[in-house]
Amino acid sequence: MSTFVDQVTITVRSGDGGNGMIAWRREKYEPLGGPAGGDGGRRGDVLLEADQQLSTLLDFRYKSRYDAQRGAKGGPKNKYGKSADPFVIKVPVGTVVRDSENGAVIADLARDGQNVLVAEGGLGGRGNTKLVSPTRRAPHFCEPGQPGIERKLELELKLLADVGVIGVPNAGKSSLLALMTAARPKIADYPFSTLQPNLGVVKLPGGDGYVMADIPGLVEGAANGTGLGHKFLRHVERTRLLIHLADLSSEDLERNIKIINQELALYSQTLSSLPQILVLNKADLLDEAAKQTAFAEIKAKYRSLMPAGIRLEADSPLLISCGTREGLEKLSAQIALSLSRLDKKPVLYEIEEDPKALQRPDSTFSIERHKKVFNVVSDRVDRLVEVTNLRDPESVFHLHHVLKAMGVITALLAEGAKPGSDVVIGGVTFAFGEDW
Ligand SMILES: Nc1nc2c(ncn2[C@@H]2O[C@H](COP(=O)(O)OP(=O)(O)OP(=O)(O)O)[C@@H](O)[C@H]2O)c(=O)[nH]1
Ligand SMILES: [Mg+2]
Image (cartoon, rainbow, N blue to C red; front, side):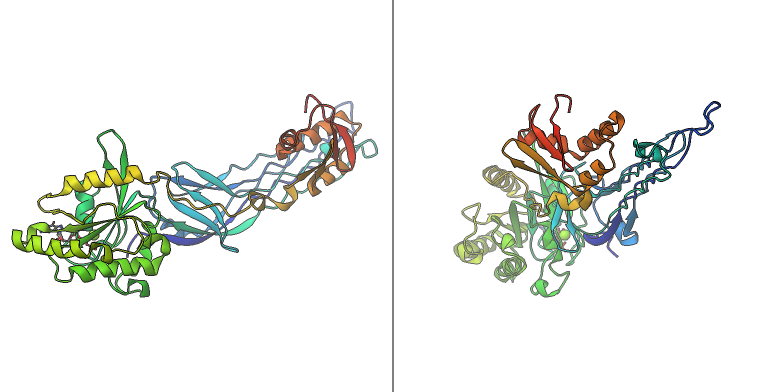
């Protein structure tokens, strides 16, 4: 069985926030001491992170559920509960993350180390110390931690390469990758020797380089599952240029070229409209005369053999031999030239998800501005103001702290709030201060 897996569904759950604590001071001269219950620890977030050491989603076949830890309960003597560490799930570079409920793209993890928060953990609840007010000096209750969020995610690995090598089985695709890069794919004289995509880096003289992908061979009917099917084509869909490799010595040369272009078209419009370089390999297998005849025949039909409307990168097919290295220099130069002319940006997915959808609904807010008055609209903030004693500096400080952590202050500044501006929070009007 191949160890290459490029599509999985996983379930992640962020951690619950820790509950607050109910506790009392016990001091020598204060037998009925005040409240001393600490707050619960913060949640464990779940993140996905691209790691270039990984090349398959195989691990997720064996383990498809990931639960982050919950924050610890608050402690006596006003001790905060320990916060849970974020839970980081490593995935290969090129993993596209979708919400399995609506298919929306959450992230395209295209760079090593790039990460995305997929489930925000719950906040810790407050201990009874924080819940004291003038009318409630000894609260016998605390807040529960917020629950974590559970989500189902679809992960799809779509390799990121600059150049994709396509062709029928045995054309010499893996041989070409092995000659041009340090990759060591399996090469054999039978069809379907390649069972998973291979990547290699082609080094250019200036120190730059590009990534080349060799995928399993395609046969007629691949779109309907014949041979290895066409599923590996997803790994060349993000390339900028295709090397269409054909065996010059094959009796079916013309037919093979047509089959490949037909299968590309059946797979996607994106693929069949990518620029191509048609490369005829195994030139060493024919004698000079036969070689020229075969080459001239394909050259004459070049335009009609290629998908309509695509950019042809060379004015004729290129002739090479992976056996004798004939024509390889010319091919390398043509690829470098083509890449330099093509858009350098990697083909990335657009993020379709509103980042707010990733957050717990009750931690979201919006700011409405009516002339010089800024209104903070948020369920959570309303509830917070309700339980905050606005005459107690400590409570107000706590409120301010939460507003800051939620990003409300930054958002107010972005909307144009200045010292002195009226800001309505939870129905109460505050003056925006210098020290906010
Ligand atoms: N004589 C000659 N043989 C070649 C040349 N290029 C590749 N071959 C041979 O052709 C056979 C197939 O080569 P591969 O590189 O495995 O072909 P592939 O296109 O990757 O094949 P699949 O992975 O099965 O689709 C091997 O035996 C290679 O040694 C060439 O230029 N000349
Ligand atoms: Mg191969």
